[in-house]
Length: 142
Image 1: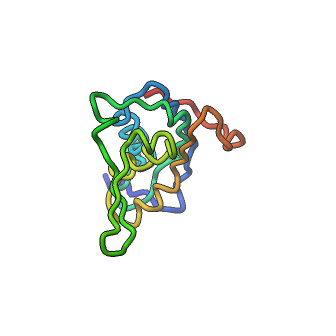
Image 2: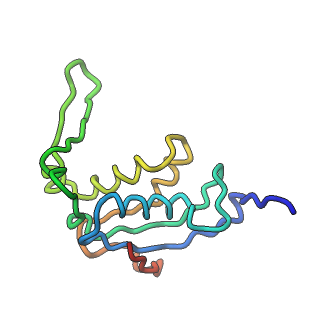
């Protein structure tokens, strides 16, 4: 019996919808990362992008346990000397709540070029509405 290896041409991605309201960030990120990567499929092949499209709604209502909301910070670098700046999670939740989910999922993907293509399949929305109704996404519970 031969080992099955998926090819880029044969992969047919589906669309999934995840509601982030009241879900811990880590559990949500693991589920989304595995679906974007294709680990939930029996045809998963590590060197081919076999993943599906994932839509995350209600990113502003994702839950962080403990004191992570006040203690955790995201670091940004402008590229200039002394251009380091830090922003707390609470500030990012006010301004860009979708960044929190995208950043968590990005950290759970492999650090290579395929992961950059996989991350394009993740669509995160702060509120309960999204712009991909025409794709008929299947609702997934976390």
